[in-house]
Image (tube, rainbow, N blue to C red):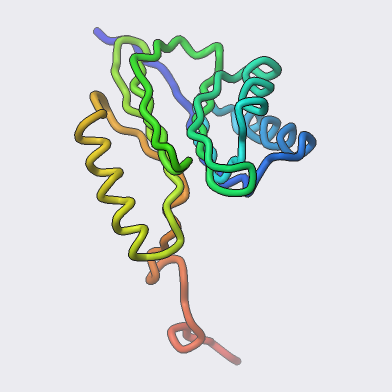
Length: 167
């Protein structure tokens, strides 16, 4: 019989974290969520910031760097989580990172994405995401990120679509 485990997941677009005080607030937010695994987008990390987080927090961090002013994704995994990294794949644009990990004898593919704003670029990007999952994914897929799209019927309403009950 397989043992049971609990993994708490979170995802956050941090809109840049060059500022140390903001990085500290982000890490504190992740801890307050009791996150085992957190997907971050728009990190603007460089190797120095990645190393700082790895050395000074309770999380291991895996990144795909964008620039220090745009893009960047990261997956943070609590150091106390009993996991084994099988392999890592990331793009060079800072929009996608994929980790294959084993947790308690189960294999997971963790993917964090930051999709482009432009619809035509986003469509191309999602084809790349699909291909990456097909080629690199080996386990149960868990994906987090900023898809930069909305479900219009749910997320957005214009003034004409809302019914107002005035009494």
